Amino acid sequence: MAGFIQGLTSFGFALVSMPLLTLWLPLQETVPLVVMLSVITNIAILAGAYKDAAVRKIWVLVLSSIAAAPLGAWLLLVVDASVLKVATGLLVLAYSALLLTGKSFPVRNERFAFVPVGIASGLLNGSISMSGPPVALFLSGQGTGKAAFRANLTAYAAILNIITIVSFSQGGLLNGNVMSVFGWTVPVLLAGVWLGIKAVRRLNRFSVAVLHL
Image (cartoon, rainbow, N blue to C red; front, side, top):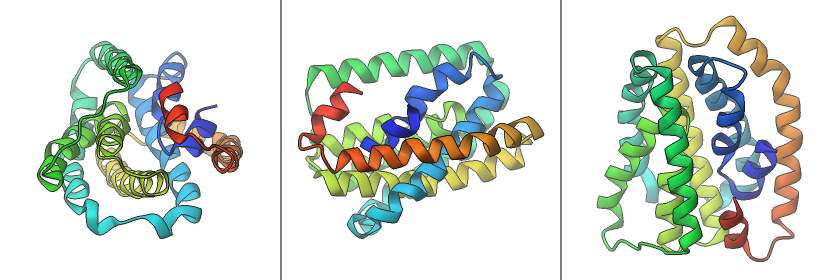
């Protein structure tokens, strides 16, 4: 299901998978697992959407998030898991509430706004693997079209996730259990992403799908 949602909207994998996986795995294993699986979804989506990506337009966003990602990984190591789980739940609720309002918050100085958005996204990715909500809200608020939204968000997430994985590796978070679960979940994940990519081509009202998520 999480892979399907990601293939359909280009984000939401962590929003769906994190609450469920934490029932089964410790948070310090769940977060690295979700980030590694997210990279797989990013690559799968970019294979058909890279032509619409404008990395030059979002480079400030990328650099800001990369700078914050190691701090997020450090928070995962030092902050109590129960606190991070509460933060995860609050983020999901807040994000859902904002989507349900249907409101957008366009910003005139887009490049300047990329800095705080990127920092927030990097911190969230390293600590609870949820980099998508701040960036998705910002890009949708700027009136970004469906193709550009998918491509830019996916390219951004791919870069950030790779850097975050490096931080996890340096922090000793990529243990044997994480790698084992990663290995056997990839095929199922790819099947879900493939179905989501196919479905989005038949979806005329892209924003409705995002809202329902």
